[in-house]
Image 1: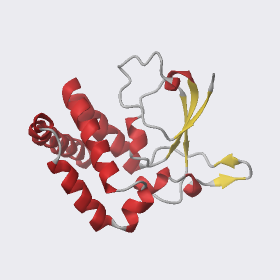
Image 2 (image 1 turned 45 degrees about the horizontal axis):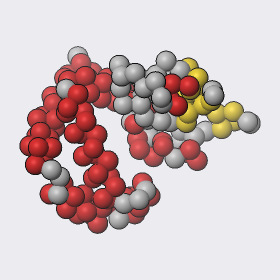
Image 3 (image 1 turned 90 degrees about the vertical axis):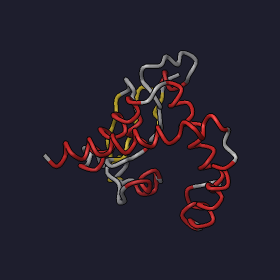
Image 4 (image 1 turned 30 degrees about the vertical axis):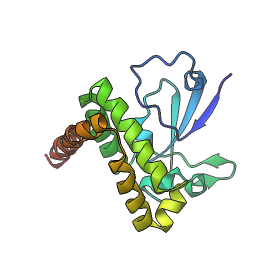
Length: 166
């Protein structure tokens, strides 16, 4: 089975996912300033495409630019390159346990905020409140580890920004 994945997230390339269909992908389509796509670490061919919006909005395929029957090809935007470096630096600074805790916490919080990105955008205050409520319900060990993970996030962001400004 071969195919194309449209803007997916593969958390780490150094883990073997032998049973994963992601290993069978030979093409990846990635918007030019995609944030989530920066977590992509794949051996597949990557086609970077242009989008009419930036950031999280690029994960809506209806924003992808098309000319005739093809996507408009692009290169990673400056913000896309920043996200690439920043998130790879941050992920690389975490232990396996921290990655596991963060991934579980992130998806639990997102799920608490709403069923879709549109729902999160439509009612951001309600979504934020639900996420705060969910964070209180996290298990104690995960909650204790999150400050260190967030400290690493800030340090990685500062280090990446320092490199950009030099």
